[in-house]
Length: 604
Image (cartoon, rainbow, N blue to C red; front, side):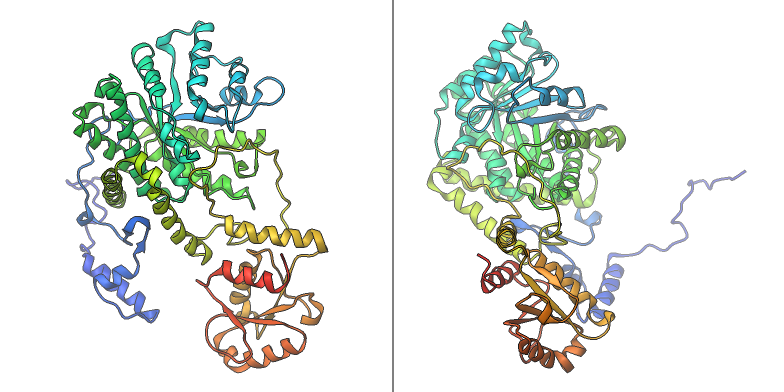
């Protein structure tokens, strides 16, 4: 029989307490071995990571990095959740998105609801299902059980009237109706540049507040700002400014502050940056609670969140990797306290998803809820020094951006003046530089591309509304390069090629040869490693080896390559060597290098 000591089983009792300074000294030693002489805070800073919005994450968080008390779930400031029970043991609302119907019954809609989906997000009108087809889209759906969320743009009022008539025709009690009519005039203006009048949306809100207690009229959609290249703080700040604008309009239309707050649902993106997404959703609730407090209704400040896996992160090449991205994003959304989560199918960027893609999308949430048990604990990330600090820092940055919008006249004013477009474009330009230099890698696109992959083809999806803010994708620069290579393959029967000239033993050249092969394949250029240059079909070559062998042989190898017909000779690494035209290395502008290479090869 084992007898525990009076203080229980204290596993660390025999170990001396370590200090932060002692850890820093260990970091100093590691940096010193890599040739960097730094000490104390400077050593720790060297391992820190700079994010967008001026945020910086440190390599280690301790109790000294504490943030303000986040409170408890269900109580202001709602950082830890809008409801005291969280999403409950059943987890978040699994909300599936639909933009088109087939020729027959709405089989995809029913398949989603019968196999794990719990609500519907219907895109209607421009870029979606025609409004007159709404009844067919919902044929067979138990409308008293499945919430319906509309996204109808300029047709919102017409679509809302059609849905309310359908509820009446089906005999659904007004008290059983759940969902959102999807009114978002500022979001529509952000998408199209066209500003609808707010009065019809206010009328819908009044109607919902008075007759449909479980139905909201308005959505504050932050996706237009995320999809235009905005940062997390810009996405949050723009959503706050939009929400405040709607509160002003609704209270002027006669609703009380609490009623007006109850008419809004917020839609945010979830990316594969797990901790940033968790912090963003927690910060969003804290910020909206502050708005409600200032408006005099702190108890009504619980933000309802619909979270969508990021369209910006979805790739067209190697789309199977999108399943991994959306899984991490959905996990972050659930841990972050989202009320509803939409996992976009892995083929979303290619067109209309097929049945397999839709099944994987909805099963992602099912596995996270039923097998990973993410919903068993409310705010499982709460108390993490890192998450709490990141939540606080992001909330401060977003509040600052929101206040700048308000100073410039509010959300409508910054949309119409072009100021918001400029802010988002500036952020995206900086991010594009990181993508081009592969500081922000895209697996399957800028890193580890597979040139031999069989293209995944899908029927085209309806064209979404346009004319306002742009829609960007992380893969767009590389997609353009790969499209040039594909056209060359179709025209000539072969991809453009580059020859890898290796020097020495595999131990000397393998690392840099692999780097060069990876780099050039990202632009659709096939690396050739076998045989002589003259037999490779290439017009350009890359010298790959160690620094020591470069010093001895790089110039000679470059000369022999040029004599064999090479028009341009690269070297994998840095330095200055005779006969070398340009250098490729970690951190170089890959997009610029690849584009220039295709130009020289005559690949239009």
